[in-house]
Figure 1 (cartoon, rainbow, N blue to C red):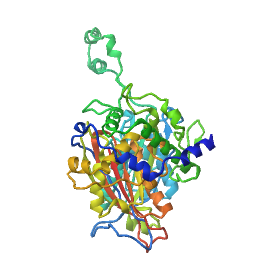
Figure 2 (figure 1 turned 90 degrees about the vertical axis):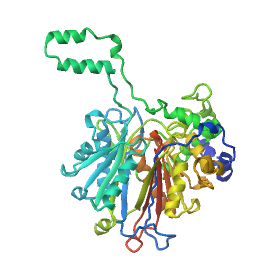
Figure 3 (figure 1 turned 90 degrees about the horizontal axis):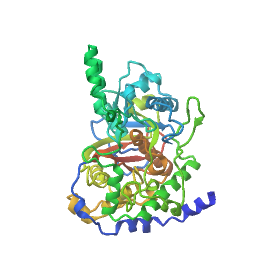
Figure 4 (figure 1 turned 180 degrees about the vertical axis):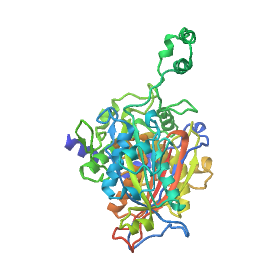
Length: 500
C-alpha cells in the first residue's frame, strides 16, 4: 500500500500544467455569478532574519506577535472524542499551549475562543475551558462565532485589544465537537413544556396536555446550511464547481493531492503544532486520523453527496465533520521580548468584506486576495507560502479560476486585471482541511501556525492564508514576526487571509 501511495503522489500532474488546466477554461453559467457578500481575513507575519524585502510595520502602532500555537489532533467525528464535551477539547488545547510556551497563567490578560455549533451548557466555552485549564477566575474570557473563521475572529479581536493598548497578552483559539451537536425538541413541544412549567393549577396543566399531538415529538436537527438561502454548503460548492466548469476528476485529483501531502508531512514530523491528548478512559491520541490517501479509481466510485445523480461533490473531495481544538499565544512585541520569547510572526492588520451567500458563498479568497496584497504593497510573486482552507476541492479550484481570470476581475470585481494564480508548489504543501480535518471553530489557528511553521522551515518571507465558510463573509489581516536584532530565527512574514 505504501509503494502504491508513493507512486500515486509522485505521479500527480506537474504544478504548472495542472494549474494552467484549471485556469484556461472559459467561465460558464455566468448568470449565476452575481456580485456577492463574504468576509475575508488576512494576516502578515515576519520572523527574524538579517535580510528582508520590506517591513509592513506601521508608525505609532504597537507590534503584535504570535509567540506559538498548538492544536490537539483533529479527529473524524464519532471517534475518540465522541464522549467528551467541547470545553474538554478546548481545555486540552489551552493546557498544551501553556506547556509548549511556559507562559505564566497570571500573565495572560484575556482569552478568546471561536466556536460554531455551541453546547448550550457551556455557551461561553472560552470561560469554561480557561477555568478548567487552571487560569485565574480573574482572567476575562469570551466566545465568538463567525462560522469557519471563528478562530480568525478570535485572533483579530486579540490583535485589536493589544494594538489599542488595552492588554499585552491574549490567548486566542477555537473548538468544535461535531460528535455531539444539540438536537432540540420541536418548537411546539418546547412551547408546551415552557407553558406547563408556568401552569399553576391542575386544570391548566390538563388543558395544555390535551393539546399535545404526536408530531410535537419530531426533533429539530441542526443543519450546516445558510439560514438566508436554506441551502447547504455542499449544494453551493456543487453549483460553484458547475459554474466554473470544474470536473469531477479534477476535484478528486486535488483531494488526492491534499491527502498525499498531508500524509507526507505527518510522516516527516512537519505538523509540529499537533500535541498529544490523553482522552479520559481511552488511549492518548497523537495524530490526525482523517488523512487517508486513496486512488483516483477508488474515489471515482463514490456517488454525489448533494446534487444527485449529476453532482460532482462527493465525500472524497469534501472536508469531513471533525472534532478538534486549537490555541495561539499573542503578545505585544515589547512584552514578548521582555519575557525572552522568540515569536514566530508579527500580526499587522486586518479587514473584513462580504460576498453574496447565495451565488458567491465560497469565492471570498478571490475577492480578498488582491485587496490585502495591495494594502501590503505586495504581489502574488512576493508570496512564498499559501495556506488556503479546503472546504471542497471544487471551491479551491473555482477560486483559482476566478483569481486567474481578467474577465472575472473586470466584470465582478471592478478591477482592470486579475490577481493571478497561486503556484501549486507553494500551495498547501503540508495538506489542508480536506485531509487534516476542519473543526469549524478551530481551523483558523491551524492555518496560521501551518503558514508560520512552513515559512520558518522553508526560509520564506511572506505567506497567504485563506478560508471559505458560511455566511459569505471574508476577513483580511496582516501580521509580521520579530526583529532581526533580537532573535536568531530566520525572518519570515505571513500574510493570512481567511474567508467565511
